[in-house]
Length: 257
Ligand code: ADP
Image 1 (cartoon, helix red, strand yellow):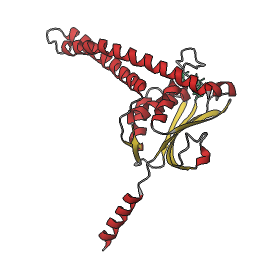
Image 2 (image 1 turned 120 degrees about the vertical axis):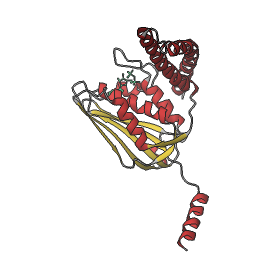
Image 3 (image 1 turned 180 degrees about the horizontal axis):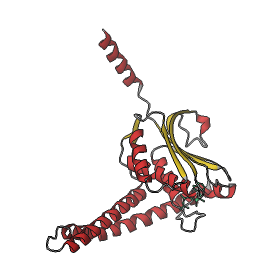
Image 4 (image 1 turned 30 degrees about the vertical axis):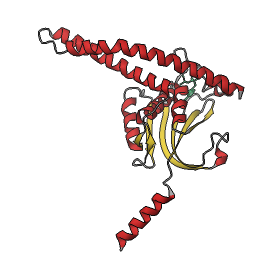
């Protein structure tokens, strides 16, 4: 419990840092974006107009990054209807160009039309983080499999009573055939700044977990050194209330009559 607390505190300071930083950055980037915007319409000099577009595009990208950093800091998410098919399509698009030739990407959804309450952008970010980790774990190539299924989870599935919430879940799996992880790595996996990479930040999985937790979900990992890793994200699918089901049945009966 103490370790949990320390982790939570560390996490809060990180969120505060990210919040302050992104606020200041946003104030810097907004005028830059505006300047680029007006420069790109500069008819007299095409070179200046091109520079304007460049400034605007970079400013826009910076603002997007700042925006996601802000929502990370706030832990705030806009609830919307997320469709599994749309999530995978967006991910495929983002991964285009990042998948080396030696890596074979397979995607499979058991129900692309399944929709649930959540935040599309955040979950997409989550899947992207996991996929990029998976690719980095396979320097010599291999198969990257992204899969969605549904699972009815029993209370016994959950680690603690706090986490426990039996019911129907969407399961998003990102599986690689890469280097895998040993116990020492697995133990520290979700700690801020824990990384085994030269240029890693150690924030990818932390923000993933934060997003999944904000969705009321849980993350699980299975890994075998030298064989590969599977990350599972479980997102709760809301039950229809008994009342709603009853109304629907009533409606169907009337329709038949
Ligand atoms: P980063 O990728 O910047 O290191 P992450 O939080 O995403 O930060 O990951 C933390 C560490 O977890 C990585 O440095 C790596 O050691 C390990 N890891 C994550 N995903 C995988 C994977 N699919 N295969 C092997 N190791 C992984």
